[in-house]
Length: 208
Image (tube, rainbow, N blue to C red; front, side, top):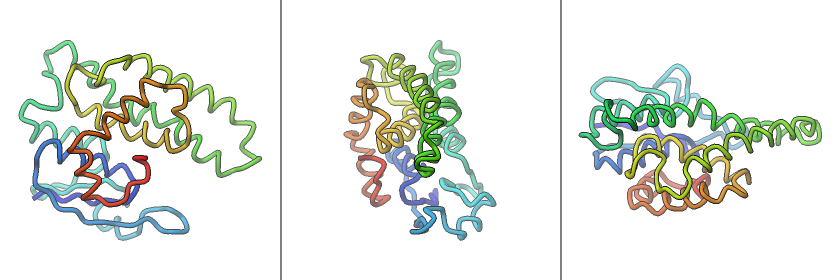
């Protein structure tokens, strides 16, 4: 049995979604953010030293980090689904988007989140952040175009990874003007497996 250590309003929601897409049995151990700091509870450090979510356990293995978890689950249980063949022309694109999600797309999101908390003191940074928003989300918006998925014509692990930065961006008001990304995100939210993941995981404010 796969166990997902699931923190509310976090990256672990996309792992529940992936497991639903793959049709796998799993159980959830739920954790709640601290109401004051919004940080994960100390109890998560008993699962992994970083004390972050998501973390899964499977076959006596503990796997942390969203990208690593997606790769692990798709490769072990995907049965030729959720990723292109490694010899196909689309595989390099798949690798790019898988790593871009956390390596680049989250940068303007995190900058916006932290600078917002600075109030007036953060104003000098706003032009730089806006530049990064336009750079990265403009890039994604153009690359996606009118297609339904970022890689090929079916859902892949790259879509699982990319949806979270887009949800976080929308929650901060950063997706305005990026119509392709907004349409894409709405379509992901309509997937039955996505809805099942949210139902099992509990309230997920980032998905709004």
